[in-house]
Structures are given as structure tokens and as C-alpha cells.
Image (cartoon, rainbow, N blue to C red; front, top):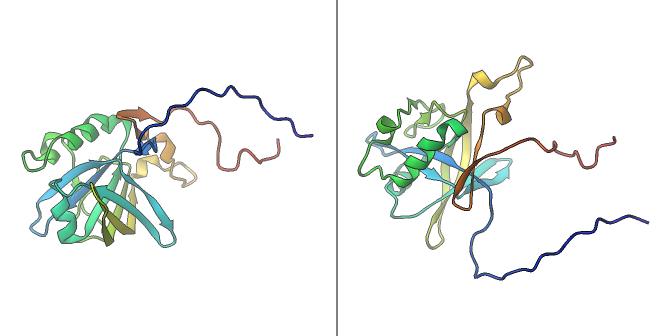
Length: 197
């Protein structure tokens, strides 16, 4: 007979419908218009939607300054953030590109995308995911930009001697319920629960 763990069940509260799916990646999204005016916006409403073809999405409020750039060029880059980039990540989320040059103020470096024409990459980021919009869904408070991944750039300093990219040693940043968090210690690897001991 299988032994089950006993758990203390706490009293629950029921709240109105809302997004409580946390933690999420806190990413800086770089965009540009066709005239070359580039901007950065911080996004937590993002995620993987398909692995073959590789696709992801970002959701952006129509009133955001970058929204018209996304509509115009149908390109963006998802730049993963780290604990070292926490200040810039937050700052780029609360300041508007209408008023400030985020690249200059946060001392971030534009790099050329490998497969995109307009959107630059942020060279301080360990991973740059170049995306081309395939569909825009107007959902309500946010428009969802569904996109195909065209290329991924990674910082070579995180490659180990065996040629493996050590993503989890970059100090990745997460966003949870209004707070930025480091990912903390490793608890296991994929499939660890079923591996023979």
C-alpha cells in the first residue's frame, strides 16, 4: 500500500478573478521604429507558447510608448535579465521612452540583431531572443504579440569548457507579485522525481 504524506490544509480565501500566475520572467524588450528610434520596455507578461516552431508572446498595453513600434515593424527582442540588471529592469518599466532615452540613462548597449532589420539587442543581457510578430490579439487591457523566434544570441562568457551554456549561473531575475527576486538554489533537474536513486 502506497504511503501518502499528511499535509496541513490551511483555510482558503476566494478572491475575484485576477492574474496570480507567479513567478514570471522579468525581461527587457527592445524595439525600434522604422526610423531607428529604439526603446526598451520591461515586460513580465511573457512566455513560451510553442517549441517547434519556437514561438513566444509578450503582452503590452496599447498606451505604452513601444506599442506603436511593435505594430510598425512587427519585431522585438526579449532580453533576459539578471540580478545585476535589476535596477535597469525596474527603471525601464516605470519610465517612458517618450520622456527619456533609456539606453543612455541606464548605460545599456545596443547590438545588432542577427535576423531582424529594426529591433536591437541589449548586449548586457546574457540571452537575446529575436522575435518576429505573426499575430496581434487585442484582448482587453493588453494586446498580445504572438511571435516566432528567428534567432537566439547568448553571451559566450557563460559557455563552460564542454561547450554547454550555463544559463542558470547568470543570476536570472524573476518577478513575483510586485517584487523582483533571484531564483535561489537548485532543487532538482528535469525528471529528478523519477530517477532511480
